[in-house]
Image (cartoon, rainbow, N blue to C red; front, side, top):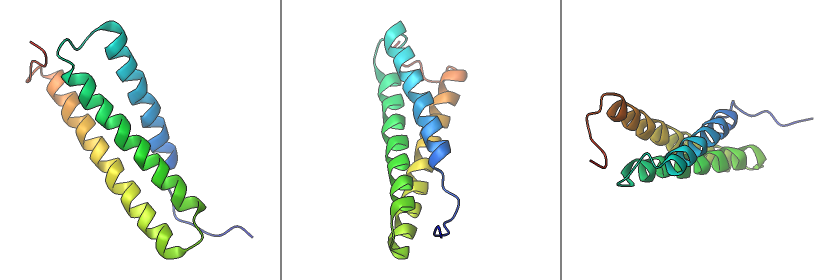
Length: 102
């Protein structure tokens, strides 16, 4: 019988990881960030989404209940940190508040 576990953020974190990779590749490939600040911030989002995906996966694979809870807790923290950074970056770019690179 499969062990019960809580809902994981693994699919969402993995999807957002792929999306931020696509955004980062587009920024780099099209040369949209002359200063490199936008792609550095996007790269930070990639790192946090990758870490969140890894931690969520480890919580699914772990046998020890205390370890599962720790992995889940850290996966959620890194996921929300990445979401926050992406949201701030999106708002700054959408409203052209910070002229990154100009």
